[in-house]
Length: 70
Image (tube, rainbow, N blue to C red; front, top):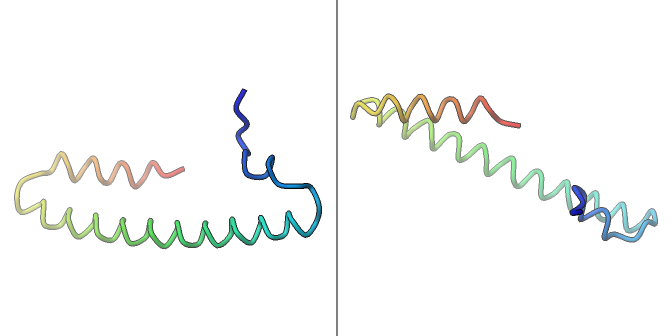
């Protein structure tokens, strides 16, 4: 069975190591959130352009994907 927490499972369980793991994960989360925000903004601009081309089904798919975030 594959663990759903492989990073923390592979980290030694002492306070210093877990603190470093938390910092690393927090930095990665911040970077990922920034990237998602930039992708969403770019997608919104593309949707505005797509409206002129009649791609309404693609625009609807984009909006649904944005709403279905975990």
